Image 1 (tube, chains in turn red, purple):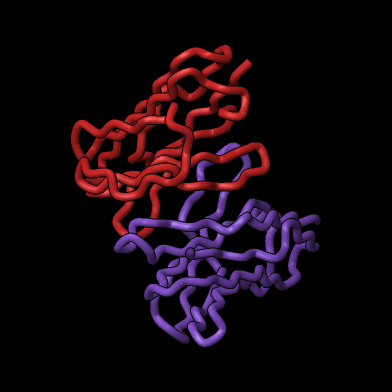
Image 2 (tube, chains in turn blue, green; image 1 turned 45 degrees about the vertical axis):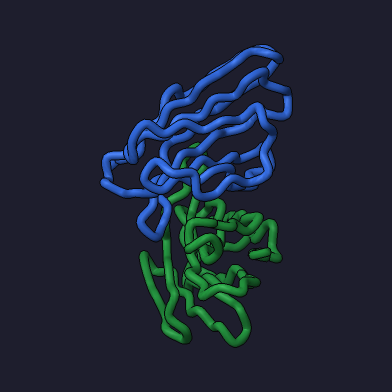
Length: 109
Length: 113
């Protein structure tokens, strides 16, 4: 049963455009994450929020910025996308283990 | 910093054989270890978790034991099925109050008839 929702499922855009991805969880967790899964299927944490507070901010380009309006929502904005941003972006909600959303596949042309 | 090492990139097996996927970790914190499974075109899902030393944890026929002395959390199954074909990730949470999660590079398991 899906409890972490992401929109959109897919997004195709051109280099230099801005994109935004949305994530919502209905699990009641305090902590949410953004991960990037590249073409080699490597999973890398990008950001972690706990109750709207940024807790983990890994070394990601400045064009990536997370936003959290409340503990159930965590969005990701990418200003001026680059080709290397093509990937699947996975949102997760967590108590201890991670509950992943279905992902947003970004293709940058 | 924290790290997780999965030595096998690809494991191919015939149905019915046993499997062990290796996972070792490094951390200065009290570790919480996880195995996630990702089937094709799906999101990763939790398979197993443990923070208790030397205690076997099991789920869906898979099992693993956290050994803090050797910093290992290997995943095993006694008889693989076709449906076990997937990508398996070992993960560690420890740093930043447990909020920082590090994933291994993943092991793809392919089970043939």
